[in-house]
Length: 285
Length: 127
Ligand SMILES: [Fe+2]
Ligand SMILES: [Fe+2]
Image 1 (cartoon, each protein chain N blue to C red):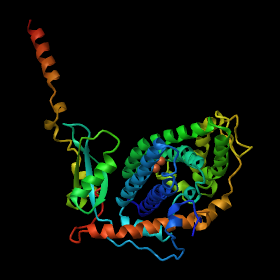
Image 2: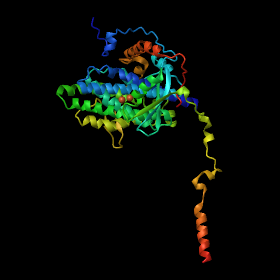
Image 3: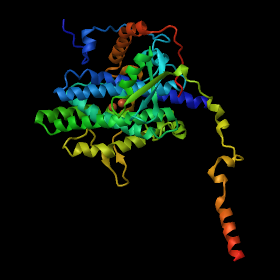
Image 4: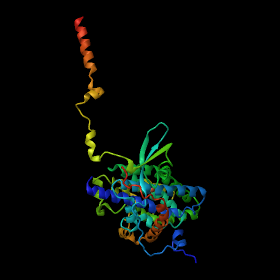
């Protein structure tokens, strides 16, 4: 396996794994506050899935030779990144419904495409993930519809959440193709199966009508489909995107604080169970 | 004192400090890797589905059930430590290549119709 192919795969899969785990933090805090028992149960199940996705992806990365401990250390030291979208706060329950519906939808666009890529262990992990994501999307859509068809106050709450999340969602697919550092090579190697801009265009095709049909709006007056079938939109603020990547988003610091705390306070369990004679190695792949 | 710095109650209640003391996970702290094989229905093969990290075979089974057995149909799970699986090297794939000379091992290596047709033609000729 070519060295650079391996290195890029590790970088990408590891970032994806970190994103699943960090993404559970903003949603996890809403479990106790979710309205009603059924929503709480669904959210618990979803958050468990996301952490499970992290496990599947860490495993896929491990087959390439990087140990789990090294990946976690790189996350905690800030050396490796996770998706920017999880560095924003979920202010109200409406934010949680927008995340469950639209952020998961965006993740599905990305994961369905990459599941047809060239590295088997990553594709197999993505297949399993996509199967579970369909439930995430459906429960998010259901919660979204409930607010959109509810009282004026609920609709207003939802509209405000949509306004907050639209830009982070447009950011989600990564920088424009013309500025993306690794994009072209990753596409050539079939590690990434769709370019950032193509995914950013595919997303509104499937989901913007589902938002508009409920009478909700999106905070971009330029958003529309042209005759050629491509979506036109105002470019999101890419300077902000890079600021958040480099640690200056509204929640970067507290997400890392909580993640480090979890690692520290779980350590006694891990070490108590550790078997010092057991051989350690990598998965068979 | 109420502390409402964050929407995350953990940040508020635990008074997590800003002091960025590095947290380092030691090698081996995430235990061993076990390969997981699940069985979809009784009588079917156990199929490899992925891995879990666990400190013992018993806990590997518990984690495997949680990770791979909680959604799709599953009636049984095997786990085995990755370190205990002998495997050929990926680079040695060529040793599995089929030998074209050994047609005597394949059904296609036996041309019966040719012989039958030849026999039948002969019979017709004798009449
Ligand atoms: Fe996920
Ligand atoms: Fe999800």
